[in-house]
Image 1 (cartoon, chains in turn green, brown):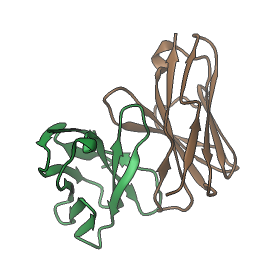
Image 2 (image 1 turned 60 degrees about the vertical axis):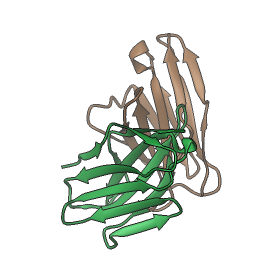
Image 3 (image 1 turned 180 degrees about the horizontal axis):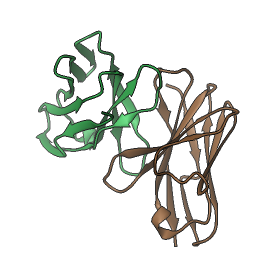
Length: 112
Length: 115
């Protein structure tokens, strides 16, 4: 019930391409879905987040798509750059608490 | 965004000794702080949740006598790894939020190596 499943485990995208990472959750009590970017040896940094009342949120090159009925959400990175190479984690939390359940992570490599 | 500072960034200690890691919210009062543990190339696993002035709530399987958490003020939480062993070597990360359901901000993490 508390799991958040993330795929793919790793992803290689050419510069300028679109990176897509998918997550699925089981617990319908989750109502906050953030994405984090983590560089080696650093803490995660919040990229973008969405709540279930909207189906899409865009901030710059980053877009979250949310499908409430399917209990799935995804991160799209447009015009991917080598500097985007990092590990990305999706997460989810419940309405009555703010502790996060993290996905397993996706290692993104953007090649020249 | 809000800043959460974690100290030290890395620490090496001998087996059997204790290590304290500090987590400070620099520009906001953190009602709740969280401590995570991350093994290489793995996800973040929540260890415990701490609220200022009360006892921490530990996740299942986390030894509360080994990982002592103190949240003495609205800007400081500490994690003490007691009687550290090599298997405690890991990346420890704290996060803080100033309101329930609001975004959490993460510290830069502490790399603990026990030799």
